[in-house]
Length: 111
Length: 114
Image 1: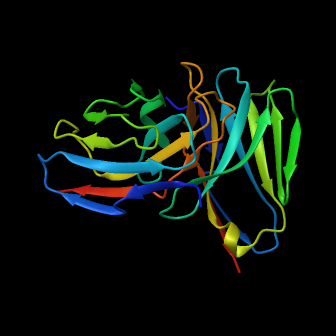
Image 2: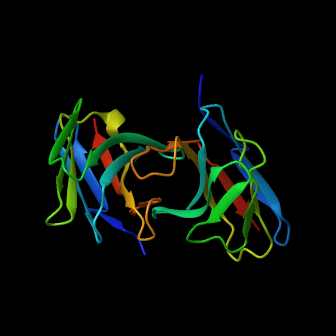
C-alpha cells in the first residue's frame, strides 16, 4: 500500500492562479519530499521538508507540513503553463528508509 | 553534465522474452533504484541497491532481476515470469538510501510487451 496519497487527483487552473494539492500519509515520518513529473519524463525533486519544520519555500513553491494531521500541502503561486505536470509526494516506506510515492496530482495550467 | 541515462527510451518485446533495461549514472551516487509506473498511478519500487554487489527487493520484485557490478550501472532484467511487464520504468539514484536523500531520476524506458 502507498504511504502517501495526493488529493485532488487532477486540477485545472488558469495561468496566474494558484494551485494547491495535498498529501496525506499513514505512519510517522522523518521528512516528506515533493517531486514534479512532466509527461513522459522522469521525476524532478522540488523540495524536502523535515518533520520539525512547518513550512518551507522555494521560489513560487510553498510546502507545509502538519505532523499531527499527517498531511502536507504544496502550493504553486502565480502558475505558468510550464507548471503543467504531475506532482508527487514521497515519504519513507513502512519498512523504513526507502521512499514510497503517492499516485500524484495532475495539474493543467491553461494559458 | 552529471545525470542518469536510461536506454532505450522505447522498447518492444514479444511475450516470453527476457529484456534488459540499462541505467547508468555519473553522479557518484552509492544508491540506485528501479521503479515501475503504470498509467495514472504512482511509482512502485522494484529493486534498490545501496552499494556495489548488493541489492534488495522492493515491493514488486517478482519477475525482475538486477545486478550491481559497477557503481555507475544498475541494469534491470524483466523476465518472462513478470505477468504484466508493459509499463514505464524509471531508474533513480541518491547519495544514500536514507529518506532525506533526494532521488535523481532518469527519463525512463517505456516497455511494451505484446
